[in-house]
Length: 354
Image (cartoon, rainbow, N blue to C red; front, side, top):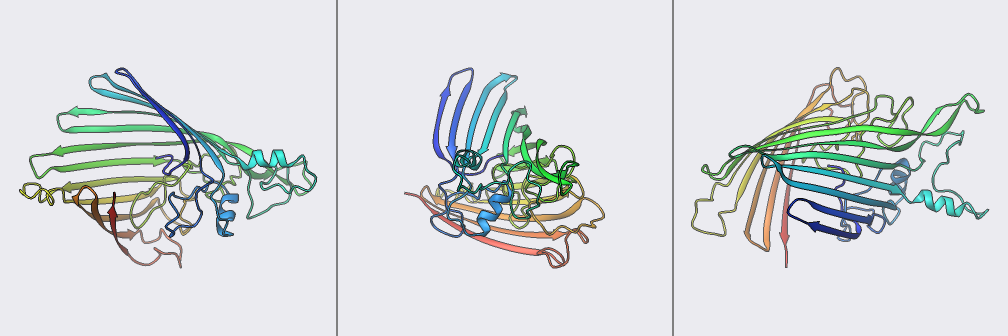
């Protein structure tokens, strides 16, 4: 829910009967920026205006950021419940680059510096973030399982704020980030009915109504927009990310051929899912830019997805995904992708491993 990408680095894990510990340190800046290429192997890492400008200008490599993660899992702590704790840190290494480069009189800083009085629409500062998470998971009764989690997001973000001592009346200042994200998943397994599973999930991530954009730029107080390191896919058609969003999902999956004696078709699975979306805070930005600024409420629309998974062999499989997003009447601005009618999308993915 916080980081959804690969890293170049190292990871080490320790497993004991009472506790499981893992530590990871990695770097994001060696992956290619452009999607649609066979060389692209990681989602985009965009956390600031500088990242956005770099991507739009066609920079070859992604944002140079260091990521560190520590996770602790305590299995069967009480009543077959598992306790999970995690700490995720990410730092913009361009800040270090600018600090070192400042020793040269010819060096031009990549990031905007704190105290700068002139406004720059396409430039930003360092966005350094930390995420502290805790979770519980386990059975409620036989065949009914849950997973609950909470993340507290902290860090700093550059904002253009009022400054009485500035000649322009404003200056760039770093503000603290205090954001939240929480959610729960409940799964009920009906193994006697063709291995059916009924699932219900809920997720909430805070927004910031005084932020001028999804990336940086709040105008008062602390920055409360929850911004993950890399975006998590929330649906097939409408994918606003886990920020300033409330989403619920009800799904039902079944393996219709599981009773077949043919081993290469019994794993076929069909999943039906309905996902309504709501703004967590009206007026706060989304990762999607086409929201109607005069939206009457918080409801954005509902997506209905149908997915068919089929892996006849261990090294060959396919996924057919179809999605229909039904937008709310006044949720999207005129000219945006979802402003007038429903949007349908189908995607076929084939995978071969060897």
